[in-house]
Image (spheres, rainbow, N blue to C red):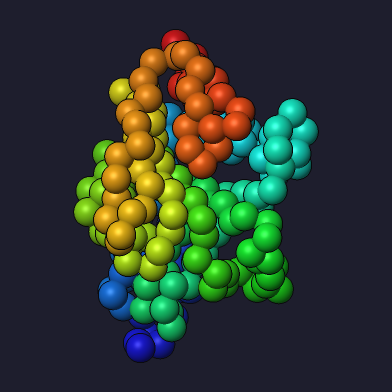
Length: 184
């Protein structure tokens, strides 16, 4: 393990987001507004019914941009959103490192992160056993949902437009897709 790489991650400027994949540092600037808006809205749609249990079943811990340490600081990812089923008893760290693999991750796609999210992070999440992944395309108004099966991602659905959609693993309460996209 390269402690130098993790030290480099910790020393990034405050406006940068850093991750480690196979011990190599990847850094990108903070996202543009369409990305930030969709990120906020996805979290807003899920937190009350699934995190707090208001208008939904509860049972989840949902966190924005957690720093997940999959393997000895060699694979460190910061998904836009991540969720853990409460029965798995996520221990809240005093610092910023979370070592429990999430049950669900959501990546909001941006021109600068699209290839990393699809080609590096999705395989990484599969390798470590994340059960569900969403890719949200805020410009095209699309949510792609995947479920892990036998170590491979299986498409659950592709949801578009402004209708409501019941998307696993949060299908108990339909998501208002129209709320995810920036007003025009």
